[in-house]
Length: 376
Image (tube, rainbow, N blue to C red; front, side, top):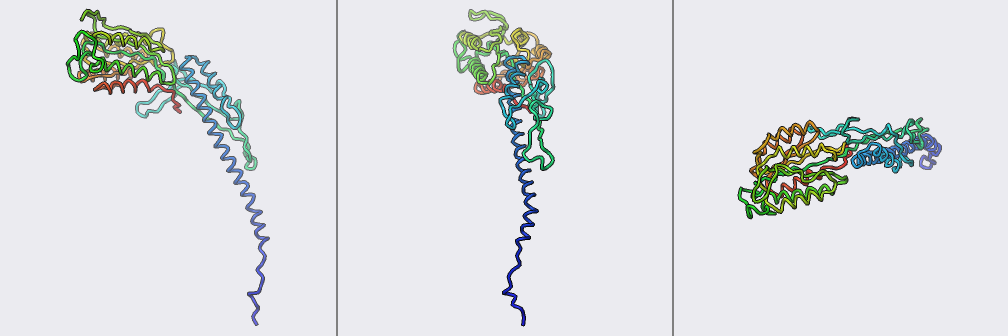
């Protein structure tokens, strides 16, 4: 007779499962500890990046406002200390704070930092949580299990302050009385330029927009005003070739007042662009220029240079003095090619505005591109 196999009890396997658990459980614990430490290291890296970025931005902004490296260094240390990394304030030492110059590549738009220099505009801060740093290394929770008890991260941040001392050099020649499109003159020939239909009216609106944009930027910018035409006497008014209407100042009230004054009478004369540029250079090499600020001229004309030296001559001089010239042509009568050459000679850009709306948009765009950037 065959044995009754169906009535046989199954073999007990609890002993085998205990052996499996005994083998797998330590691996699970090790992997869990590893995952916890990896998450902790990622959090520390993020905190270190935040603290280092804050330190470099604070230093760059202070460098712009105070023009003093000692004050900027103190601002970097204070900002770092107010940020916790692995539960402790980040401490940065003097040798971890570097001042230098950042320049933007025209081909890649990337900034390159070079330590030192005269026209300082950047701060590089190195945040360390290493055994040789003031803050020390970061302890891991279960690192000893894996033979590594400490984590030593390093983070670098570079902030660039695109501050500029700016001189507006604007055209007040007789053609600015004309209509924006065409050669007719709206309103009386010897009265004030038409506030909305004349080229001068369009310029007045654009300058107001430019100043409003500067007042919205995080930092304080200095701005000056130069106006040019040619010497003479028309409509009972004596005109000079070029005037420094307002010197560099953080308060733009004088510029607004001068634009209002010029808008209250006729503008006359020929177009001596080089004379305006020469006065712009005089402003940006004067005693009110900040040592670390980028110096720039915003040159505007609606016509053709027709008296005095070629504008390319003072443009080359400006380049030698580290002054950037951006040029704006307004109306279809402007000499675009000549103004492009002036901008190129002084490391700037050229813009053309076919109408008042475009002119105001260009002025606002130039004014608003002045922030503190974290460039690395």
